[in-house]
Image 1 (cartoon, one colour):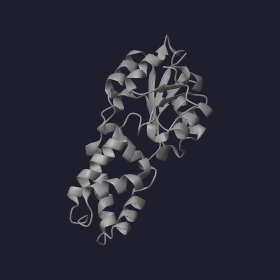
Image 2: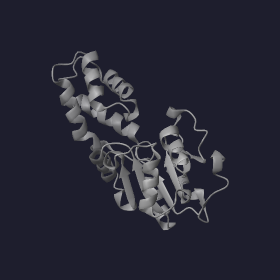
Image 3: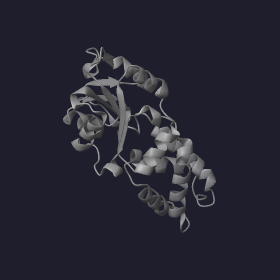
Image 4: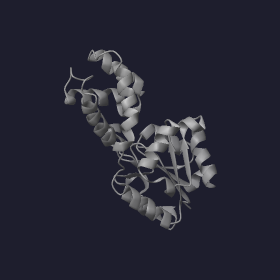
Length: 231
């Protein structure tokens, strides 16, 4: 019996790639005096390369940009501060985000989020998406003192939702951090397909759109047609 569904945040509920690109494009114009030596296209492209889907700390990204493009003194700190001051204004969710969460609540399953990152930053993203009220438990690695794929954070969310790992589906975009981490902790792993990461052969099911999540459940169980990506 599936009693809970837990989601990753970035790349699963939150369209981080599009949001970051929009933020950096806007930053180029806000900080034009510091960035006069490069084109907008060059700035955005190099930022996204260095950012590596958020796996590189922003202070490192901006320090490298400043060095590579010989930006004026203090530019790295200015750009770093500007990024976090404006980032959440550009936050957008993936299509069908709120309708999917509403339908899952109607189906009677408990909902949770487990995400790596800064507590204040990830909470601000959740508020910007206006989805906080849908969730019964939200675990952010900084506050928990443990990061995915460590099994402890997956088991901890199950405890807070009062379910067992075998009663829980975890939906994420990263094949190793999300799917292998969840499955090694005893949860069902559903991969939100992202070509950036290649393939995910270990997933119990594969989806392309959030609207597919409610249909994974048939009478409280993971649909046999969805298992192993046959959907």
